[in-house]
Image (tube, rainbow, N blue to C red; front, side, top):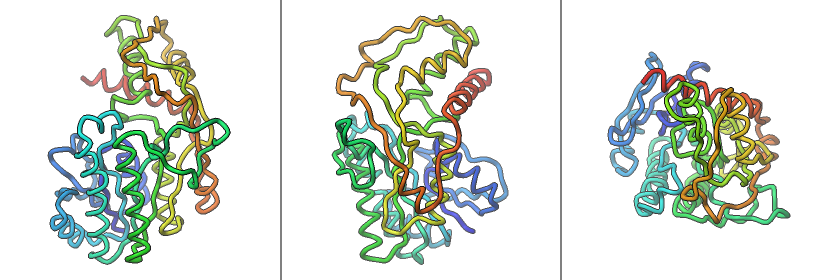
Length: 317
């Protein structure tokens, strides 16, 4: 099968590429020189394709040449905090880029499409309203969440208006190897790896450790995208999550235990977000019912692999 991927060099995208290659698919990976900072693996079944999500004629030409059977759309501005710095760009890339990709797909044979949005479309909820489901009313708290909500709505209306067989994936927090700094697990793991290697003092500077969140291994998330492509219902949205909440403190404690180092944990007030919602988690009942997917990789394994990944990066530097 010919599979077109945007965001193939990103965190989840790189693991999706691994799984698709293992299944024997031909991959055509959209590559934008200004934003694709990581390389693609050397493999005879991977073909980089230059293009820009913000250029509709170019995207249509790229899609027409690629002739994909299946499209995974993962590319975008991925940082909620950064969306406050340039909300217009976030909207342009995450919403406008999705609109261009969907339009190009309609004009190029209507391949199956999986659009990845985010559980960040939801706002704070009371404990009695948990777990989150696909029916929970969205109330995004930042431009990033708004951009992803709009992208998901575009997926729905392109199914309704054009019959484009598109499915929306709404992942919660995902963790594991290859994740960039700016998220809780790589921020912790990179500090601990440096301490373990003797490259920094044994002091951890952290933000609020009390919030509880839903974490899923990135390799399970990539497998969910594949299952949605195979068995998800067109025009539908699906939450991808573990189904339970874990505190940030537990994540840190587990990483410290795995690293076998003694550290002084200090709360840095500049990292504390006073509006942190105490607890958020979702239900994966819908995707499990429709596709059979469920998370398989234990949290401890995800954290151990993230820590090993950061040690490997530091040693290679």
